[in-house]
Length: 340
Image 1 (cartoon, helix red, strand yellow):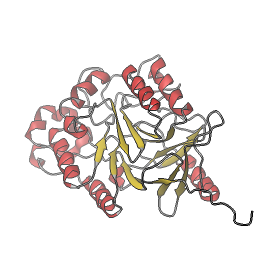
Image 2 (cartoon, rainbow, N blue to C red):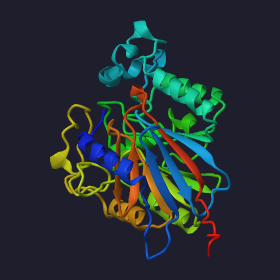
Image 3 (cartoon, rainbow, N blue to C red):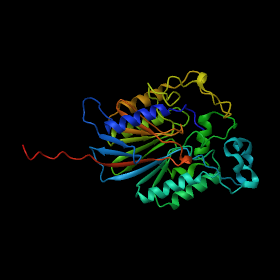
């Protein structure tokens, strides 16, 4: 389930702008040349990155989020009271082994990825409806058998059994380090880096809408490497002037604006809002020349926005068949004018 209000009008405006202008130049810090130019091609739905520093060779990446997949078996029976709203009939004992039908979004995306010779598939959270062991095993087996390189970061539903007592941080820590562990392939669930052909895909779990001190420290370490960074999160980062109102880093993120906590049977957001660490993380992202873009999910609405000339891309839900297709290549070198 999404937490943010839809922002389709923003999408339509920016898509029209991109179709007219043809490109964004996302990094203009301190008068330095940008690390990358990025163009969205509406006719193909592909994002074209042209990098001044690297890459080692052209390559492709596929990003998807919000599959909300469920398959259950007898191991899920003790949690059935926590899973009925999100899992529906798939969690009932008579339907064990039957999926909720949303796997087609992933299977078609993987088929497209193989056709396009994609170098990395990024699963951007809410791939599951809750941390069912059967669901984790199905996703892990499907990804491993695809023959593709892949990585994963959690969304708020992946680790949340609705109605389970406890704070969000504690629930996330428990389930990411137990049932969800196979999806990380040995990486730290809170954050890790995957470098592909000279581009650093930084996976940060902001699925509680907050950033932890160790995640901010990870960001600063990765920035010191000097590689172009694509930040991959589940919850979009706040962008003033748009209606991405309740995203990570928003001053409106607080208990007074939490309209879903009763439905999702969880503790409400804190009355005081975000921590200073979360604000510092977001500010660092928007101000850092190395960061050439953000990929996020959560809203179930396709959108493209930019802040400080830095783009943020959000696909619609994967269960609707939506993905982001990114093509990274070296920026074309300027040829000398033979007439001069």
